[in-house]
Length: 213
Image (cartoon, rainbow, N blue to C red; front, side, top):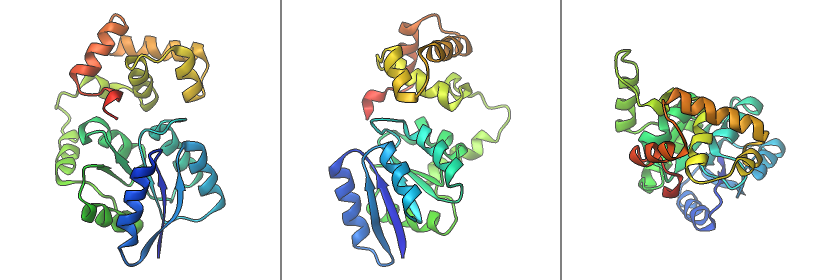
């Protein structure tokens, strides 16, 4: 039996996932978490074969919690299920240790296929994502500027662009305000941007806005 922990802050999404999984033999939902704190609490106390993790949780980002899970439970497969399109997060989360990436627009049968794949130790990627990963291996391909950012820099960039204040970002990412300011300066420098206005324009132009959640 594949025991699954669902981590998503939307009850309707969790209910839909439970319905899909309940109709399949050999797998069951063994836990539900609505924020990052609950995810960590569950995996520390219980055994799961797969974690289905939303990239956007209210208290910490999915990228942040993925890094924590990789540290505490390196063998636990994590399947990212997100509203964001593949081009925005997929390559980044796979490099961070996720076992797969799917959008919430995926068909139910594809989700079941992905769960079985990662539970058996494999990696799940869609055909379009597989092509993207292959292109990433080409050393001469020109990558978007935001792909030069670290995972933490990428998170800070999205939060700044969404209008969050430094203190709010610091609280969300468990950082000091000074560190957030340092990240912001580093982001602007790496991306050759002058201020927050240009950063917002870049995020919108490249379809990275958090408002798509």
